Length: 393
Ligand code: CAA
Image (cartoon, rainbow, N blue to C red; front, side, top):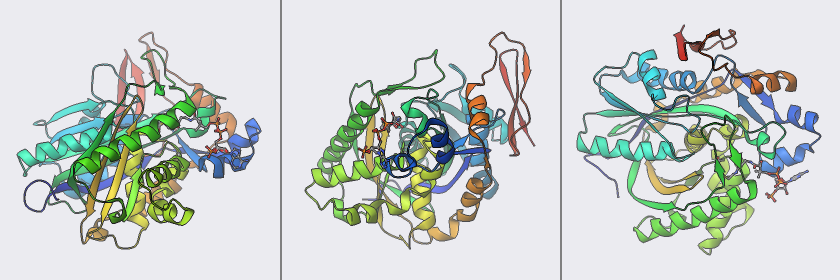
Protein backbone atom coordinates (compact mmCIF):
# COMPACT_ATOMS: atom_id res chain seq x y z
CA UNK A 1 0.00 0.00 0.00
CA UNK A 2 3.04 2.30 -0.04
CA UNK A 3 2.51 5.23 -2.38
CA UNK A 4 4.87 6.97 -4.76
CA UNK A 5 8.12 5.92 -6.32
CA UNK A 6 10.76 3.49 -5.02
CA UNK A 7 10.69 3.18 -1.25
CA UNK A 8 7.73 5.50 -0.91
CA UNK A 9 7.31 9.10 0.21
CA UNK A 10 6.85 10.45 3.67
CA UNK A 11 8.34 12.17 6.70
CA UNK A 12 12.10 12.16 6.52
CA UNK A 13 12.71 14.28 9.61
CA UNK A 14 10.57 15.89 12.31
CA UNK A 15 11.49 18.50 14.89
CA UNK A 16 9.38 20.67 17.17
CA UNK A 17 9.72 23.82 19.23
CA UNK A 18 7.63 25.40 21.91
CA UNK A 19 7.57 28.62 23.89
CA UNK A 20 9.75 30.38 26.45
CA UNK A 21 7.11 30.18 29.18
CA UNK A 22 4.77 27.63 30.71
CA UNK A 23 1.69 28.02 32.93
CA UNK A 24 0.77 25.04 35.07
CA UNK A 25 -2.86 24.03 35.36
CA UNK A 26 -2.29 24.01 39.11
CA UNK A 27 -1.65 27.80 38.90
CA UNK A 28 -4.75 28.28 36.72
CA UNK A 29 -6.85 26.18 39.10
CA UNK A 30 -5.58 28.09 42.15
CA UNK A 31 -6.63 31.34 40.44
CA UNK A 32 -10.10 30.30 39.24
CA UNK A 33 -11.04 27.85 42.01
CA UNK A 34 -11.38 24.81 39.73
CA UNK A 35 -10.86 21.39 41.33
CA UNK A 36 -7.50 20.31 39.84
CA UNK A 37 -8.87 16.84 38.97
CA UNK A 38 -10.96 18.49 36.26
CA UNK A 39 -7.78 19.60 34.50
CA UNK A 40 -5.48 16.68 35.24
CA UNK A 41 -8.07 13.91 34.70
CA UNK A 42 -11.17 15.54 33.17
CA UNK A 43 -9.38 17.14 30.21
CA UNK A 44 -5.99 15.44 30.68
CA UNK A 45 -3.78 18.55 30.80
CA UNK A 46 -0.98 19.49 33.17
CA UNK A 47 0.39 22.70 31.74
CA UNK A 48 0.29 24.98 28.71
CA UNK A 49 3.01 26.68 26.71
CA UNK A 50 2.73 30.48 26.71
CA UNK A 51 4.60 32.65 24.18
CA UNK A 52 6.85 35.47 25.37
CA UNK A 53 6.15 39.01 24.14
CA UNK A 54 8.87 38.51 21.50
CA UNK A 55 7.66 35.11 20.24
CA UNK A 56 5.02 34.29 17.65
CA UNK A 57 4.19 31.61 15.06
CA UNK A 58 7.19 32.69 12.95
CA UNK A 59 9.81 32.44 15.71
CA UNK A 60 8.36 29.08 16.82
CA UNK A 61 8.38 27.81 13.24
CA UNK A 62 11.97 28.94 12.63
CA UNK A 63 13.08 27.29 15.88
CA UNK A 64 11.35 24.03 14.87
CA UNK A 65 12.78 23.99 11.34
CA UNK A 66 16.36 25.14 12.07
CA UNK A 67 17.59 21.71 13.30
CA UNK A 68 16.06 20.05 10.21
CA UNK A 69 17.95 22.42 7.91
CA UNK A 70 21.13 22.00 9.98
CA UNK A 71 20.96 18.22 9.52
CA UNK A 72 19.89 17.97 5.87
CA UNK A 73 20.77 21.28 4.24
CA UNK A 74 18.22 23.15 2.15
CA UNK A 75 19.37 22.64 -1.43
CA UNK A 76 16.57 20.15 -2.27
CA UNK A 77 13.79 22.20 -0.65
CA UNK A 78 11.77 23.86 -3.38
CA UNK A 79 8.53 24.29 -1.45
CA UNK A 80 7.69 25.50 2.05
CA UNK A 81 4.13 24.97 3.25
CA UNK A 82 3.23 26.85 6.43
CA UNK A 83 0.01 25.71 8.08
CA UNK A 84 -1.54 27.85 10.79
CA UNK A 85 -4.83 29.08 12.13
CA UNK A 86 -3.23 31.89 14.16
CA UNK A 87 -1.98 33.79 11.13
CA UNK A 88 -0.19 37.14 11.58
CA UNK A 89 -1.00 38.68 8.18
CA UNK A 90 -3.95 38.49 5.79
CA UNK A 91 -1.73 38.56 2.70
CA UNK A 92 1.89 37.59 3.30
CA UNK A 93 2.62 33.95 4.15
CA UNK A 94 4.33 33.59 7.54
CA UNK A 95 6.60 31.03 5.87
CA UNK A 96 8.30 33.80 3.89
CA UNK A 97 9.75 35.19 7.13
CA UNK A 98 10.90 31.68 8.06
CA UNK A 99 12.42 31.23 4.60
CA UNK A 100 14.42 34.41 5.20
CA UNK A 101 15.42 33.63 8.81
CA UNK A 102 16.73 30.20 7.75
CA UNK A 103 18.40 31.37 4.55
CA UNK A 104 16.47 28.96 2.32
CA UNK A 105 17.08 29.03 -1.47
CA UNK A 106 15.37 31.84 -3.40
CA UNK A 107 14.32 29.23 -5.99
CA UNK A 108 11.42 28.10 -3.79
CA UNK A 109 7.66 28.53 -3.48
CA UNK A 110 6.28 29.43 -0.05
CA UNK A 111 2.59 29.37 0.86
CA UNK A 112 0.35 29.48 3.92
CA UNK A 113 -2.51 27.04 4.35
CA UNK A 114 -5.56 27.31 6.58
CA UNK A 115 -8.33 25.00 7.69
CA UNK A 116 -8.27 25.22 11.47
CA UNK A 117 -6.20 22.43 13.06
CA UNK A 118 -6.33 20.32 9.87
CA UNK A 119 -4.09 22.60 7.72
CA UNK A 120 -0.80 20.76 8.26
CA UNK A 121 -2.30 17.49 7.08
CA UNK A 122 -3.39 19.18 3.86
CA UNK A 123 0.20 20.47 3.65
CA UNK A 124 1.59 16.97 4.13
CA UNK A 125 -0.70 15.51 1.45
CA UNK A 126 0.15 18.29 -1.00
CA UNK A 127 3.84 17.68 -0.29
CA UNK A 128 3.44 13.97 -1.13
CA UNK A 129 1.98 14.99 -4.49
CA UNK A 130 4.86 17.38 -5.26
CA UNK A 131 7.46 14.76 -4.37
CA UNK A 132 5.65 12.08 -6.42
CA UNK A 133 5.98 14.41 -9.40
CA UNK A 134 9.70 14.99 -8.80
CA UNK A 135 11.28 12.66 -6.21
CA UNK A 136 14.50 14.71 -6.13
CA UNK A 137 12.65 17.56 -4.40
CA UNK A 138 11.88 17.92 -0.70
CA UNK A 139 9.08 19.92 0.89
CA UNK A 140 9.34 21.63 4.27
CA UNK A 141 5.94 21.39 5.95
CA UNK A 142 5.58 23.57 9.03
CA UNK A 143 2.67 23.59 11.47
CA UNK A 144 2.82 26.52 13.88
CA UNK A 145 0.13 27.89 16.16
CA UNK A 146 -0.63 29.85 19.28
CA UNK A 147 -3.96 28.76 20.73
CA UNK A 148 -5.69 31.63 22.48
CA UNK A 149 -9.13 31.76 24.08
CA UNK A 150 -10.76 34.46 26.20
CA UNK A 151 -9.52 34.78 29.77
CA UNK A 152 -11.88 33.18 32.29
CA UNK A 153 -13.65 31.16 29.57
CA UNK A 154 -13.88 27.32 29.55
CA UNK A 155 -11.47 27.31 26.59
CA UNK A 156 -8.73 29.01 28.64
CA UNK A 157 -7.59 25.66 30.07
CA UNK A 158 -7.08 24.28 26.55
CA UNK A 159 -4.61 26.87 25.26
CA UNK A 160 -1.02 26.16 24.23
CA UNK A 161 1.54 26.86 21.50
CA UNK A 162 4.12 24.95 19.44
CA UNK A 163 5.50 24.39 15.97
CA UNK A 164 6.39 21.16 14.20
CA UNK A 165 8.63 21.11 11.13
CA UNK A 166 8.61 18.06 8.86
CA UNK A 167 10.85 17.40 5.91
CA UNK A 168 8.88 15.43 3.33
CA UNK A 169 10.70 13.50 0.65
CA UNK A 170 11.23 10.23 -1.21
CA UNK A 171 12.69 7.24 0.66
CA UNK A 172 11.92 8.80 4.07
CA UNK A 173 13.78 7.88 7.24
CA UNK A 174 10.85 8.09 9.68
CA UNK A 175 7.36 7.38 8.33
CA UNK A 176 6.16 6.36 4.86
CA UNK A 177 2.73 7.82 4.26
CA UNK A 178 0.37 5.32 2.65
CA UNK A 179 -2.08 5.81 -0.19
CA UNK A 180 -5.69 5.65 0.96
CA UNK A 181 -7.06 8.56 2.98
CA UNK A 182 -10.48 8.78 4.56
CA UNK A 183 -11.93 12.26 4.10
CA UNK A 184 -14.78 14.15 5.76
CA UNK A 185 -16.08 17.71 5.49
CA UNK A 186 -19.15 19.21 7.18
CA UNK A 187 -20.18 22.86 7.52
CA UNK A 188 -20.43 23.33 11.30
CA UNK A 189 -19.77 26.31 13.60
CA UNK A 190 -17.99 24.56 16.46
CA UNK A 191 -14.88 26.76 16.60
CA UNK A 192 -13.92 29.78 14.53
CA UNK A 193 -12.05 33.10 14.66
CA UNK A 194 -13.39 36.05 12.67
CA UNK A 195 -10.68 38.30 11.15
CA UNK A 196 -11.27 41.04 13.73
CA UNK A 197 -10.64 38.79 16.74
CA UNK A 198 -7.40 37.59 18.30
CA UNK A 199 -9.15 34.95 20.41
CA UNK A 200 -11.06 31.99 19.05
CA UNK A 201 -14.79 31.54 19.57
CA UNK A 202 -15.97 28.07 20.43
CA UNK A 203 -19.06 26.06 21.28
CA UNK A 204 -17.26 23.53 23.51
CA UNK A 205 -19.77 20.67 23.61
CA UNK A 206 -20.67 21.12 19.94
CA UNK A 207 -16.96 20.97 19.06
CA UNK A 208 -16.56 17.62 20.82
CA UNK A 209 -19.65 16.28 19.06
CA UNK A 210 -18.43 17.59 15.67
CA UNK A 211 -15.02 15.97 16.22
CA UNK A 212 -16.62 12.59 16.98
CA UNK A 213 -18.88 12.84 13.92
CA UNK A 214 -15.79 13.55 11.82
CA UNK A 215 -13.94 10.52 13.25
CA UNK A 216 -16.85 8.34 12.20
CA UNK A 217 -17.13 10.00 8.79
CA UNK A 218 -13.52 9.71 7.77
CA UNK A 219 -13.10 6.19 9.12
CA UNK A 220 -16.12 5.12 7.02
CA UNK A 221 -14.49 6.67 3.94
CA UNK A 222 -11.07 5.19 4.82
CA UNK A 223 -12.58 1.68 5.04
CA UNK A 224 -14.40 2.26 1.75
CA UNK A 225 -11.09 3.19 0.12
CA UNK A 226 -9.59 -0.19 1.13
CA UNK A 227 -7.45 0.92 4.09
CA UNK A 228 -6.14 -1.25 6.93
CA UNK A 229 -8.47 -2.99 9.36
CA UNK A 230 -8.56 -1.28 12.76
CA UNK A 231 -6.73 -4.11 14.55
CA UNK A 232 -3.71 -3.83 12.25
CA UNK A 233 -2.60 -0.48 13.67
CA UNK A 234 0.20 -0.33 16.23
CA UNK A 235 -1.01 3.06 17.55
CA UNK A 236 -3.21 6.03 16.69
CA UNK A 237 -2.14 9.68 16.59
CA UNK A 238 -5.15 11.95 17.08
CA UNK A 239 -5.47 15.71 16.99
CA UNK A 240 -5.34 16.53 20.72
CA UNK A 241 -6.96 19.87 21.65
CA UNK A 242 -6.69 18.34 25.13
CA UNK A 243 -5.43 14.81 25.58
CA UNK A 244 -8.70 13.41 26.93
CA UNK A 245 -10.22 14.20 23.51
CA UNK A 246 -8.04 11.51 21.92
CA UNK A 247 -9.45 9.01 24.42
CA UNK A 248 -13.03 10.07 23.64
CA UNK A 249 -12.33 9.84 19.91
CA UNK A 250 -10.71 6.42 20.02
CA UNK A 251 -13.43 5.01 22.26
CA UNK A 252 -15.97 6.32 19.76
CA UNK A 253 -14.11 4.69 16.85
CA UNK A 254 -13.79 1.35 18.66
CA UNK A 255 -17.48 1.35 19.52
CA UNK A 256 -18.44 2.37 15.99
CA UNK A 257 -16.42 -0.59 14.66
CA UNK A 258 -17.87 -2.98 17.26
CA UNK A 259 -14.51 -3.52 19.01
CA UNK A 260 -13.63 -3.78 22.69
CA UNK A 261 -13.50 -0.19 23.95
CA UNK A 262 -12.18 -0.99 27.41
CA UNK A 263 -9.56 1.13 29.16
CA UNK A 264 -6.66 -1.22 28.33
CA UNK A 265 -7.42 -1.33 24.60
CA UNK A 266 -7.53 2.48 24.45
CA UNK A 267 -4.40 2.93 26.56
CA UNK A 268 -2.48 0.48 24.34
CA UNK A 269 -3.44 2.45 21.23
CA UNK A 270 -2.85 5.98 22.58
CA UNK A 271 -0.67 5.76 25.67
CA UNK A 272 2.57 6.96 24.12
CA UNK A 273 1.01 9.69 21.98
CA UNK A 274 -0.13 12.14 24.65
CA UNK A 275 3.06 12.95 26.60
CA UNK A 276 3.98 16.15 24.73
CA UNK A 277 0.47 17.51 24.20
CA UNK A 278 -0.34 16.98 27.89
CA UNK A 279 2.29 19.53 28.92
CA UNK A 280 2.26 21.83 25.86
CA UNK A 281 -1.51 22.21 25.46
CA UNK A 282 -3.38 22.75 22.21
CA UNK A 283 -1.02 23.61 19.38
CA UNK A 284 -3.79 23.37 16.75
CA UNK A 285 -2.13 22.38 13.42
CA UNK A 286 0.93 20.96 15.19
CA UNK A 287 -0.96 18.81 17.69
CA UNK A 288 -1.37 15.58 15.69
CA UNK A 289 2.33 15.69 14.71
CA UNK A 290 3.36 16.28 18.33
CA UNK A 291 1.43 13.07 19.02
CA UNK A 292 3.59 11.35 16.38
CA UNK A 293 6.77 12.79 17.91
CA UNK A 294 5.77 11.52 21.35
CA UNK A 295 4.94 8.08 19.96
CA UNK A 296 8.20 7.67 18.04
CA UNK A 297 10.26 9.06 20.93
CA UNK A 298 8.74 6.75 23.54
CA UNK A 299 7.28 3.58 22.09
CA UNK A 300 9.21 0.35 21.73
CA UNK A 301 10.45 -0.40 18.22
CA UNK A 302 7.65 0.29 15.74
CA UNK A 303 9.65 -0.63 12.63
CA UNK A 304 7.39 -1.74 9.79
CA UNK A 305 4.20 -1.15 11.79
CA UNK A 306 1.30 0.98 10.56
CA UNK A 307 0.26 3.99 12.64
CA UNK A 308 -3.14 5.66 12.16
CA UNK A 309 -3.49 9.45 12.00
CA UNK A 310 -6.70 11.33 12.65
CA UNK A 311 -6.41 14.99 11.79
CA UNK A 312 -9.41 17.18 12.72
CA UNK A 313 -9.91 20.86 11.98
CA UNK A 314 -13.03 22.57 13.26
CA UNK A 315 -15.48 23.96 10.82
CA UNK A 316 -14.90 21.06 9.86
CA UNK A 317 -12.49 18.97 7.79
CA UNK A 318 -10.94 15.68 8.90
CA UNK A 319 -8.73 13.02 7.41
CA UNK A 320 -7.74 9.52 8.50
CA UNK A 321 -4.61 8.06 6.95
CA UNK A 322 -1.87 5.57 7.75
CA UNK A 323 1.89 5.78 7.92
CA UNK A 324 4.34 2.88 7.97
CA UNK A 325 7.21 3.38 10.44
CA UNK A 326 10.51 2.93 8.57
CA UNK A 327 13.02 0.37 9.96
CA UNK A 328 16.05 2.20 11.38
CA UNK A 329 13.95 5.27 12.29
CA UNK A 330 15.24 5.33 15.86
CA UNK A 331 18.66 6.53 14.78
CA UNK A 332 17.01 9.68 13.35
CA UNK A 333 14.96 10.66 16.41
CA UNK A 334 15.46 13.88 18.34
CA UNK A 335 14.16 12.60 21.65
CA UNK A 336 16.69 14.42 23.86
CA UNK A 337 16.21 17.73 22.01
CA UNK A 338 12.42 17.38 22.23
CA UNK A 339 12.56 16.81 25.97
CA UNK A 340 14.94 19.75 26.32
CA UNK A 341 12.61 22.23 24.56
CA UNK A 342 9.87 21.28 26.98
CA UNK A 343 12.09 21.36 30.05
CA UNK A 344 13.71 24.71 29.23
CA UNK A 345 10.41 26.60 29.56
CA UNK A 346 10.25 29.01 32.48
CA UNK A 347 7.18 28.81 34.75
CA UNK A 348 4.89 31.85 34.88
CA UNK A 349 2.69 32.85 37.75
CA UNK A 350 -0.93 33.53 36.89
CA UNK A 351 -0.60 37.35 36.99
CA UNK A 352 2.32 37.37 34.53
CA UNK A 353 0.50 34.97 32.21
CA UNK A 354 -2.55 37.23 32.29
CA UNK A 355 -0.47 40.26 31.41
CA UNK A 356 1.08 38.43 28.43
CA UNK A 357 -2.35 37.24 27.33
CA UNK A 358 -3.71 40.80 27.30
CA UNK A 359 -0.73 42.21 25.41
CA UNK A 360 -1.20 43.40 21.84
CA UNK A 361 0.58 45.83 19.52
CA UNK A 362 -0.94 49.26 18.91
CA UNK A 363 -2.31 49.47 15.34
CA UNK A 364 -1.23 53.06 14.51
CA UNK A 365 1.88 52.18 12.49
CA UNK A 366 4.35 53.51 15.08
CA UNK A 367 7.55 51.80 16.20
CA UNK A 368 7.08 49.30 19.01
CA UNK A 369 10.11 47.29 20.14
CA UNK A 370 9.28 44.17 22.14
CA UNK A 371 10.84 43.47 25.55
CA UNK A 372 13.59 40.86 25.37
CA UNK A 373 12.00 37.84 27.04
CA UNK A 374 12.82 34.83 24.92
CA UNK A 375 16.24 33.24 25.16
CA UNK A 376 15.80 31.28 21.91
CA UNK A 377 17.58 31.78 18.59
CA UNK A 378 14.76 33.71 16.93
CA UNK A 379 12.79 36.66 18.22
CA UNK A 380 10.18 39.14 17.13
CA UNK A 381 12.13 42.35 17.80
CA UNK A 382 9.51 44.99 16.95
CA UNK A 383 6.49 46.10 15.02
CA UNK A 384 7.51 49.12 12.99
CA UNK A 385 5.44 50.87 10.30
CA UNK A 386 3.01 47.92 10.47
CA UNK A 387 5.91 45.55 9.66
CA UNK A 388 7.11 42.71 11.87
CA UNK A 389 10.86 42.82 12.42
CA UNK A 390 12.50 39.47 13.23
CA UNK A 391 15.99 38.75 14.55
CA UNK A 392 18.19 35.68 14.47
CA UNK A 393 20.68 35.56 17.32
N1 CAA B 1 -12.22 15.36 38.48
C1 CAA B 1 -12.17 14.64 37.33
N2 CAA B 1 -12.88 15.00 36.22
C2 CAA B 1 -13.64 16.10 36.29
C3 CAA B 1 -13.73 16.88 37.45
C4 CAA B 1 -12.96 16.48 38.60
N3 CAA B 1 -12.99 17.18 39.73
N4 CAA B 1 -14.56 17.92 37.19
C5 CAA B 1 -14.98 17.79 35.91
N5 CAA B 1 -14.42 16.69 35.36
C6 CAA B 1 -14.56 16.20 33.99
C7 CAA B 1 -15.96 16.27 33.43
O1 CAA B 1 -16.76 15.18 33.86
C8 CAA B 1 -15.68 16.27 31.93
O2 CAA B 1 -15.39 14.97 31.52
P1 CAA B 1 -16.19 14.28 30.32
O3 CAA B 1 -16.02 15.22 29.13
O4 CAA B 1 -15.51 12.99 30.11
O5 CAA B 1 -17.60 14.19 30.74
C9 CAA B 1 -14.39 17.05 31.84
O6 CAA B 1 -13.82 17.07 33.14
C10 CAA B 1 -14.58 18.48 31.36
O7 CAA B 1 -15.59 19.05 32.12
P2 CAA B 1 -16.65 20.05 31.47
O8 CAA B 1 -17.22 19.48 30.22
O9 CAA B 1 -17.60 20.47 32.54
O10 CAA B 1 -15.66 21.25 31.12
P3 CAA B 1 -15.91 22.66 30.49
O11 CAA B 1 -17.32 23.05 30.44
O12 CAA B 1 -14.97 23.56 31.20
O13 CAA B 1 -15.43 22.48 28.97
C11 CAA B 1 -14.14 22.05 27.08
C12 CAA B 1 -14.40 21.64 28.53
C13 CAA B 1 -15.43 21.96 26.26
C14 CAA B 1 -13.12 21.08 26.49
C15 CAA B 1 -13.58 23.51 27.06
O14 CAA B 1 -12.34 23.55 27.67
C16 CAA B 1 -13.46 24.09 25.66
O15 CAA B 1 -14.42 24.66 25.14
N6 CAA B 1 -12.27 23.95 25.02
C17 CAA B 1 -12.00 24.46 23.68
C18 CAA B 1 -12.70 23.63 22.61
C19 CAA B 1 -12.05 22.29 22.35
O16 CAA B 1 -10.89 22.06 22.68
N7 CAA B 1 -12.80 21.40 21.69
C20 CAA B 1 -12.29 20.10 21.30
C21 CAA B 1 -12.90 19.60 20.03
S1 CAA B 1 -12.67 20.82 18.72
C22 CAA B 1 -11.06 20.57 18.16
O17 CAA B 1 -10.46 19.57 18.43
C23 CAA B 1 -10.42 21.68 17.37
C24 CAA B 1 -9.57 22.51 18.27
O18 CAA B 1 -8.38 22.24 18.39
C25 CAA B 1 -10.19 23.61 18.98
